[in-house]
Figure 1 (cartoon, rainbow, N blue to C red):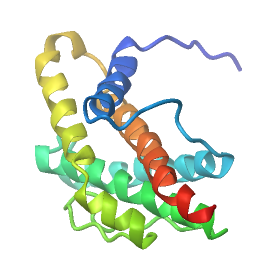
Figure 2: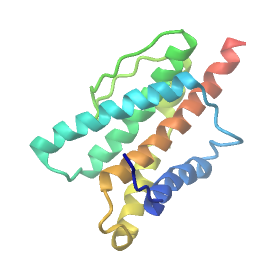
Figure 3: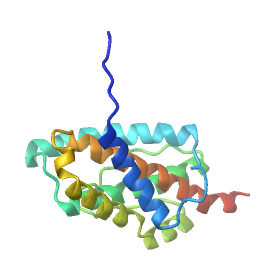
Length: 174
């Protein structure tokens, strides 16, 4: 079976929007901390989120309200904190959809990570900048799969959030 792959410049721009947000908040000072376990967690989380989004679409349609988009960024931010906590505790977590669309997101993570994350403007700024990017480039984005673009932005939010959580947890482990 052959696949025709294309380069999605809008998807790259969605990811760049989140990377630029992190840089504007002075959160990136070098390469991202990565681990195979976090990549596996990302994969499981996003596959589950795609399924949850499909279920949501059945009842509410394709359009997401701005507060739902903000909730999604906060959700992946919290899930990154949990993923890093589980990594250091040698545990595997399960995907819990609580708060994914309504902003009431429980977080079960290391206390120091949770405290720092509760103070962080990162997920709200990601949502704000992403929504502004979509609004500004609406003509350019016509015909694009908007869910794919959102998930590309969410993916980078998750990765950067994992990096931030490792930066908090790593000194405690040493």
